[in-house]
Image 1 (cartoon, one colour):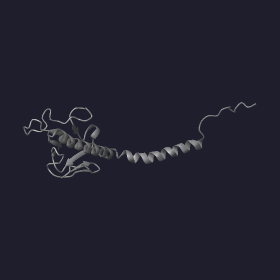
Image 2: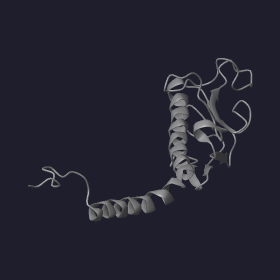
Image 3: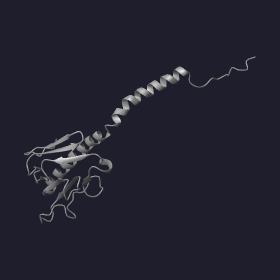
Image 4: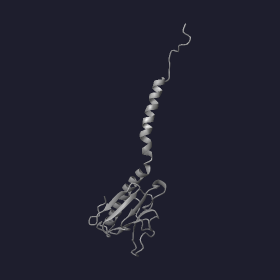
Length: 165
């Protein structure tokens, strides 16, 4: 009689368990260094959003036949961030109530606060502040360079065409 032999043996052998541990260790060794680069990835995503928002300001200037500005780190933008505004009433005070560009996502005015929340650790600075687009989509202050850090992502705006790259 066989009293000690089970019909269906279930479970892992020691070799299978060691193989799984080795595979998990390899995955962890590859993934953990990339987790430390999250802020740099956020910078890249922020740079792409900023390029899109600058192109949006340029498009608004052309379609509405009105100058639009992108302010960085100074009023009417947040202390650390940017905003897209116009001067609809012509009183030389940009970004008053009703003069902020609408956020294309439908979430109020187009202002972005950097270095907090979803943008923690990310900052942006511009060689020209504000960047103003005329009704032809050209920057009135000439060429501009915006740097998004960390990672030093660079956005350029061409003087004659207003091309954003």
